[in-house]
Image (cartoon, rainbow, N blue to C red; front, side, top):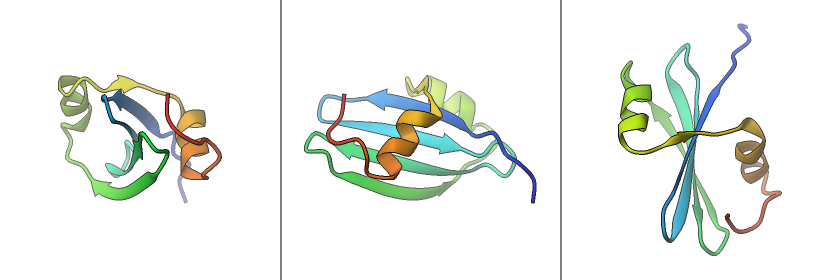
Amino acid sequence: MKDVVHSYYKRVFEDFTILVRLNPIDLTGLELTIGADGTVEKRKLQFDEDIEDDLKEDSFKPSGALEFNLYLKGILPGRE
């Protein structure tokens, strides 16, 4: 198995936040939607080769692995 360094992105909306983890090798990903009440919805995604441009165009900013993984494990309540 190959080691992968994922890329992370974030966008904050008025009522929710979206965090995205992107595997740049096979273009798979996981999206977390964090509601204002702290609920976390997970969605597995398959991206195309233009995903990084698409995220930038949609105003997603680079983010860190720590925040993503804390939400994924249910450690962080609420949202920023």
